[in-house]
Image (cartoon, rainbow over all chains, first blue to last red; front, side, top):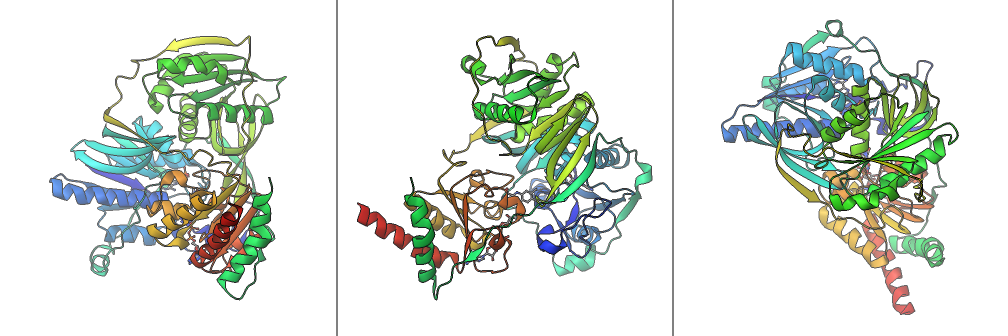
Length: 267
Length: 324
Ligand SMILES: Cc1cc2nc3c(=O)[nH]c(=O)nc-3n(C[C@H](O)[C@H](O)[C@H](O)COP(=O)(O)OP(=O)(O)OC[C@H]3O[C@@H](n4cnc5c(N)ncnc54)[C@H](O)[C@@H]3O)c2cc1C
Ligand SMILES: Nc1ncnc2c1ncn2[C@@H]1O[C@H](COP(=O)(O)O)[C@@H](O)[C@H]1O
């Protein structure tokens, strides 16, 4: 079974302090000094794929993992880590435009990669990215490929050569079902799926392979139907009054007597 | 403008979806200039009777399908919506709503936006706002292509009860058996436990990664039970499986509106904070004086949450015993 995991590396915006948040004329926010990380959905998708490969070894089926990102170069360290984790192929497609808020363009590139460059049985993506927060790319990949789509996937197991057993979240519960490939999975809040760390030996042995870089010129981008026209920083300041006290017991007493008790006794 | 509300009545929360869309319509659409129809999908025959009471518009189409499956809803919609005359489709904020909004827009060659907080619309274009940069930024988009398919952000409008209509026009469709081709087998439904007053509790206690393990999460949950508070968790706690996902507070979970909220051991990431922002009063307990939550709380205790909470519980217990 050939499985492609798509991910997007993005600066960890929780590292920015209030003063860093400023929008320039091109509707960009300077985050160049912050380290790029994986968003948790993509991290889960990658770990789920690795678990599928682990399980395939026990079942005697063959699972081949590749990974793809449309990225200007900020994801290189992550791609190397994925090689060290024994992904067979790591591909970076170099964009020429700002794709933060262009999920249809990103989805079109991923779809054409699967159709014209590297056929797949399953494509895993995250539910939502950190910067664009579009929550659309994975659904559009499924629509463009014309494949079934399982959204909010939280657990995927190998059933046989061409079926996967998937658990996914819906509005008031979970559904567990067996799905025939090909299929697109949009990974949601999946517990216990932090990405494993490669051993130093695997880093030395496998992590140095060159990443395949493709030019976006080989792909056709659709006209976007939604255009970003403004960005405005949200601030959430409150009083932040610090409760003083010489020990936790005294702080708890002040908190209870001056705040909690009066508020809770109001009818 | 012609608009359609799409409601998924195959799962529970049908009323919540209808009241949310009713709130959205009354806030953002001009009643003089809009003409609305509600399409409700349902699967159980005995649910049919209650559906006319869940219609926020003048007309309703009630569509029976086998069971909730995005594909079944999309295919049935394609059969009903052949005339191509709708300008705007509104979907609820849940998982189903935001998924179908995007996929339906693609199939209709329209435009879509999910987790929308504000719209301003005419027949030819919609200006809509939603968050970006993990809830740190409000982004404005112009949507150019009809039909516009939108799903609101959780909690962005208050629910508005549906008023009964005597002259509701109802059309019925039966699309059971339509999606035999869906490649799913061994289907199991796993329901979740529902906390009843989770969105509007008087008093909410939320625990974050600072709780460090499952036992401590249970300790805080027990304390919440003892003092009559609801208990929620951050995503870090849910992803570590220290607590159940349905207790998640934040953009991906519940947007709570308590009077008092205690956030213990949470850093206050914007995606989490959106879930407690509507609290009247926020108390943070954190060992780190530089944590983001500090500046966005009303009062703060800089200390170990466990010691502070254990001390706090003594006061509740003492007062409780005296009252009794
Ligand atoms: C698209 C998207 C959606 C998201 N949706 C959500 C969501 O709905 N809900 C959500 O919660 N998150 C959400 N997140 C994740 C969010 O960005 C944060 O990663 C998450 O909220 C962090 O959880 P935390 O505060 O518990 O953990 P951390 O950020 O690790 O914070 C732990 C805090 O505990 C404090 N601490 C440690 N020990 C103690 C102690 N003994 N006593 C007191 N304090 C202590 C530390 O100082 C620290 O401030 C989302 C992210 C994305 C990208
Ligand atoms: N530039 C990209 N390259 C590869 N995958 C992407 C890219 N952008 C988004 N994705 C995938 O699509 C998911 C949803 O992104 P979005 O629709 O932007 O919220 C992400 O979690 C990734 O898995």
